[in-house]
Figure 1 (cartoon, one colour):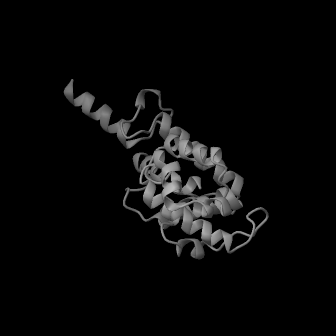
Figure 2: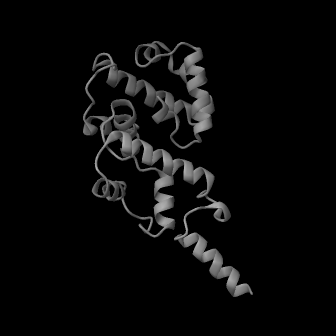
Length: 188
């Protein structure tokens, strides 16, 4: 549920929606499918786009209810997830990595921002092209991809924000930092 609820919002908003679902006793997929779309939308209101996300959650719950119990179930095919309404590459890969421990790297806005600022990408590359950078450079282990993605998210939240906090950033080779130093020097 978290992979859908965090789409286009901060994790704190998605987390509040997850807490509301837990308090209501909702478990995916049966508990979620038992709710009306209006009730579900009300519970997840904090995540933004709640009507759309309610529809996505019901679609995914239907998908997984047809597969039997989630605990111990085999991972669905990525193509099958991508065929579901509202599921794009990032959400599909998040489900595969975090719920089923499939070794696939999740590319998000934080990943794109950091790689662009350090000059590894221009910023216009496809999701698949950026993901391949990680798949080619690292041994494919779910725990490693999980940890690496978590470190990227943490770094982006602490330092590499939309308005970066360069003074405390440990990364020295960064286009943004270089541009700031260059602008500062030209003013002197």
